[in-house]
Amino acid sequence: MKVLVVGSGGREHALAWKIAQSPALEAMHAAPGSKALAALATCHAEVKATDLEGLVALAKAEAIDLVVVGPEDPLAAGLSDQLREAGIATFGPSAAAAQLEGSKAFS
Image (cartoon, rainbow, N blue to C red; front, top):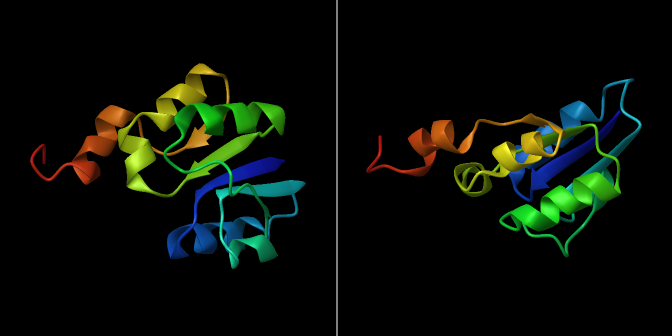
């Protein structure tokens, strides 16, 4: 299985660290990633976590099987929705569900 972890912080590092332990993992990518994530994944610093079109394109180009989204901003912007529309399995809520975390006013 090829996995793409979106983000660059501690949450994403913890997710990647645990995913890396799976015997089913074939390759892991991170966008944008970080120095810490580079020890676990191929980082794509040129694709920011808020670049929804770029992330979908990266997932297609790398034949990613599962995208794991850490930060709330791309989730609230609809990244999971766009990935699912493209036929890519995604761990992360829809934009509508992510409003609970992304907007204090909405909550």
